[in-house]
Image (tube, rainbow, N blue to C red; front, side, top):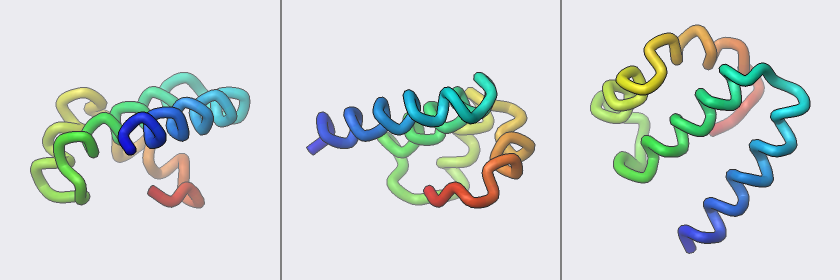
Length: 68
């Protein structure tokens, strides 16, 4: 199951890499990375995300239609 999820993430990132800036793609990667430890968008999830992407809130606002 995890291999399928990782493959889907890679395919998704390849496709959005042509649309979004590098910082946005990195944010999405780290967002998904944090889900490996925290399945929901809990306080701990966002603390971990902020550790890797301090400006994640700014980047997330640039993806208003992206569902995650």
